[in-house]
Length: 157
Image 1 (tube, rainbow, N blue to C red):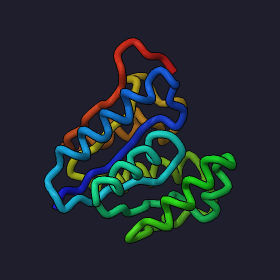
Image 2: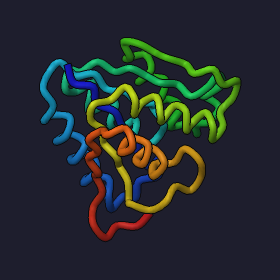
Image 3: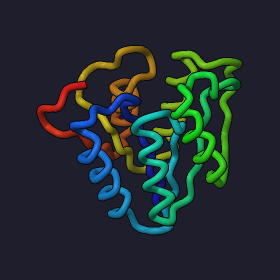
């Protein structure tokens, strides 16, 4: 069984989107079955990843950062989150009472710990706040995880 996790930017520029989706699809498709995908189902990279895991016939497990996590979403991202959450075979909610950078960091670390391979939809820049993509990549690499970075050269966020 392959455990595949994701970390990545929520705001993916239109110029990068097709490349990112193809990169996620290629990485998901290259993993031996059965496949389990771990994600916090955040807008952007997490939701793109979740859709590809499900399309490949994998199981999706949500690592939810906190109670009240739905309040962290804009309306369009919330609908997608709720749809994907309903498709999960398991949901793990961390012991934070509300969304925060600390909760997001803890969720990212949990996804990294559970994963054998991590897809990082990352432009290579430092995290904008605690728990950002760069923090998760650093944590995963510190654990010795395989990290596959998916980002088109020359595209800026």
